[in-house]
Structure formats: C-alpha cells, structure tokens
Image (tube, rainbow, N blue to C red):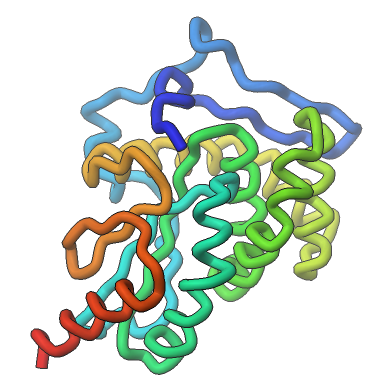
Length: 221
C-alpha cells in the first residue's frame, strides 16, 4: 500500500452513528494541517502503545500495519499466529502493534479496535483482519461504519461504547498525528513493516522471521 494516499489529509473522517449522521472528511484544501514541529515526536500524542508478550524481553518486535492491507491480513492469519504461540505467549519477546492509516476505513477500524481498551485490542484486531474482505469492501462510508460496528458488537462492545468511540474527533486527530510522526520517524512506506530490536525488515515467511528472532535472542544471551 502507498503512503501517499493520506499525505495531504490531517483531519480524518469521523463516524457519527447517533442519529444516522455521517460526517465525511474535510477536503485537502480545507483540512487542518499538523504542525511539523508539533508532530515531530509521537510521544506528544495521547495514544496508548499496544503491546503483547514481555515488554522487558531482550528482543522487541514492532509491527506497522494497516487494517485494510491484504498482506497484513495474511500475516496475521499465518506468521503472526505462530510467532504468538512460540515467542509472544512464552514471553520470549515483546510485540508492539502500531496502526498505519493509508485510508479512512483503516482509521475507523483502529478507533473500533481501541474502543475495547488494551485487554480487547488484539482480539478485535484479529476479528478485523479475519473479516477484512467483508467490512473494508462493504460499499460507501456508512456501510463500512455499520460493518465495523457489527465487529465491535461481536467483540462485546455496547452501542453506547461504540457511539462514543466512533465519534471521538480528538482521538481521531491524536491517532493521525501519532501515525504520521511514527511513520516519518521510521520511514514507513508500506505495510506490513517490522522492526526487530530496531532493525527494519519487510514481510517474511515464518521460518525467516523465527530465524531473525532466534538470532537476536542468542545475541542477547
């Protein structure tokens, strides 16, 4: 996927479920822009890092991914499941997931995933990837929002919780600024992109991924 899709848009579309309203994104000409000096450090944005496994492990894996990216969905259906079983659940590594917003539905999906808090985030993320073909191609914005809302409800979120999360303009702006700061700092131009102990990698099969992790673990011992 190409990073340039949202390069000129800093304020993203917000889903307003209550009353059936749908507020589409401001045009690039009218959109608010993020001050480069303000967005230079992602830590300035009030966004929780989503981490699995052992945050103090000697090997830390960071994934940049988009919920609308087919390659990311494939990774999470395959390599990720093995990495989780063999390295994350055994606390051998820490695994941080950072969302990338190449399009509006990707941001909306992130807002739903984060609506469940840290405890539900990865479970909702799995649902989003498993059902990507359905919600991401549901049609217009309202249809995509409705499909995302259904995923949130399957995950146990209430209508009230979803109303609040999906209309949170401050959260949307925080997420967009956070994403752009991270992506610029790490030169993320496609998804999925990985960093293993700070070293950048593109998508890999499980065997190659495990070999890199094992090498890093051996170096740390």
